[in-house]
Image 1 (tube, helix red, strand yellow):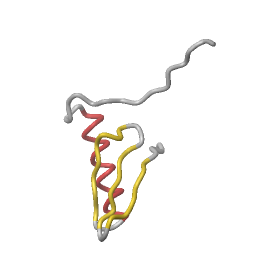
Image 2 (cartoon, one colour):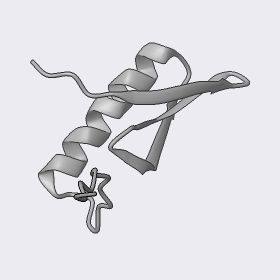
Image 3 (cartoon, one colour):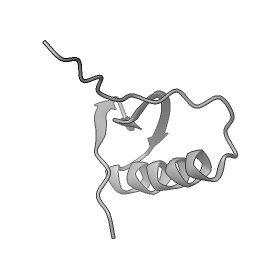
Image 4 (cartoon, helix red, strand yellow):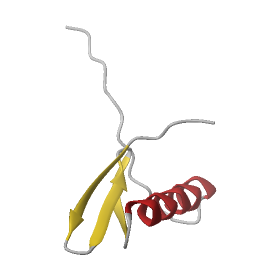
Length: 64
């Protein structure tokens, strides 16, 4: 089992959120639990290659 960070907020009756490593891809749910399920599904689609042209975020280490 692994842990993946996500950001979420509530807007009216919806919970919206995105995976922190993939902030361009948002999803929603009527509850936080539904949002979490949708985020897991989104992660599966991203990792399987079903969604093309994924933008990724990484740290660039530069010698000072």
